[in-house]
Length: 396
Image (cartoon, rainbow, N blue to C red; front, side):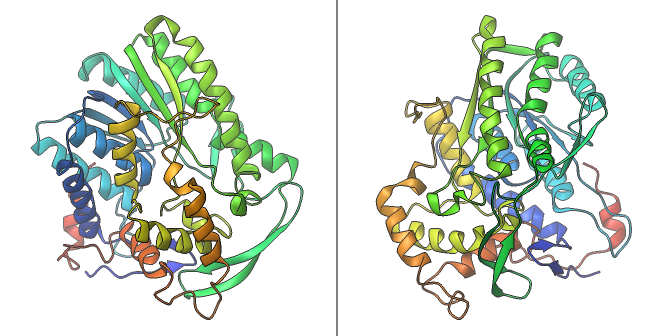
């Protein structure tokens, strides 16, 4: 069979498994080409199958020699018309490359929100992972969550208090259009905080602490995003932004609960990058094609793995931490630089439905990075055809 790209809006409905393999290898090779750093040795990544989670796993494994555990909800192949998700193959091929380096790379596939998954991971840490972890990365993004009481919550990408309209980009049709996003209801805001806030992060830490599997000087991080003022109406001041605000309260409680082992919970405010989540955030794609162009010209554009490797090496484990007044780590400072944002705003205002694909924007780069997420147009990949039966043999 041949891998063929199918899309619906800004969501890829198909995957090239061996393109994913090459993309994972490309990211690993990037990290291996950089200086090593003294970082985590036993890391648990919640949501480690793609985007920032996968980049965190790669940075830890190939930057500081860490054994890793990944928890993610992914689907494997069922039939030739449904060969699974990119994250399924990312997990498989990450394990392949890590084990070649003599590293442990354990994959748990299932609901990271559930008590059962938490108990399974804790059991594995105790029995097969050396008994302790020194890093937990919480990078779980989801549309819904069932909490510890069995109640189902749903997340929203809507603004608060007002409808918001702006220009966005449909990657399937390659058109720019006016998108209007309705104001979130109070129930949608509450649900978003429950799904995308820090409540489940706290529950993970609570159970790991009670089980005695957190090492002295343990670190845990959760990724957030603030962005410039032009994006605040539909992100930072919207339902998702409120969920991210709540994670700061969770970080403070986690740090307080772990004083005895000198541990710290940190919110990492990351820069805007191309992920499966970011491309469906209302109105954000137009900002991204302006931002990437300016940061490319300035020599500061980063993919997720480049950004996370720098964050871990220089800030989380290095001697160049950049904390703000709220104690958040700020590797997004390159994006938020005043002169950079002045240039981005100027370019943003020149972009129209007629010219957004021209070379004065970073549309081509943005779309390529999007396609790479599902294994398409990956530099170095030569395998686009494969027997379906071969995929069935791959185990995460």
